[in-house]
Figure 1: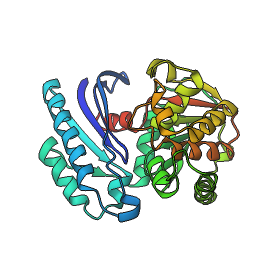
Figure 2: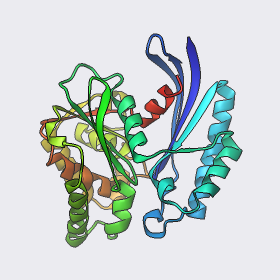
Figure 3: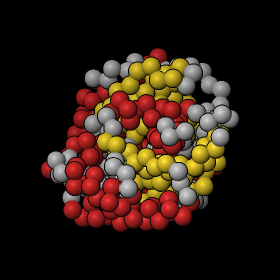
Length: 305
């Protein structure tokens, strides 16, 4: 039986929509709509613990747009998942009420553990045969999820309060960042990674998802435009990924914006994410990174199947 569903993933930096027809019996998905808007909902949350009113306005405008798409598509079920930024905010109820008013559903403000499980489910569903166990790295704006599992099932996870927006706001204030700012960011990332409960060194396959990692992949691949088909399931040599991360961190924001694959709303914060990627890769054993365009958004959709 086919069911048309809509999944919305609202993170620290972006809000994304997927409308898809799911056939649970066949285990297939026929995607109709994939959309993303950079709304920076988590702007300043790390410092203030409060969702900025302008960020809320941008997010609500995107919700109104998505509501029209969902209605036109004749969707049967909708699930809206909110992650790091709203877990940390003291005015999360204002956000929840605004989403419900516009989309007719309340946001599920999921825990780090549930966020990790949804990310893993989405990332590995269409993964070709790979060595087990698989470590999925979901690097967002406010948090990074590390999930280790076998044969499509997550065995262990850890959500870290390090993400591209959070690290940039906390440390990388110059353009380009100074050596001292980079060192402070690296120290913060390393401290977070020291406490990881997942044994990342046991992973035989490393899968990276979400916008920072897919954009780093576009740089490694030398793309003239952002090309999901080229990026999805690309296998990248770890030294090439680290070199691309170093190039991103060193580049001024305007240079990053000039790269044809770079979303303009990501250019000013991707340096913080790139440093997380580079530091994490020092702790893993696979010599390649598999990049997936499937992630928590797909996991949310399949939770409705």
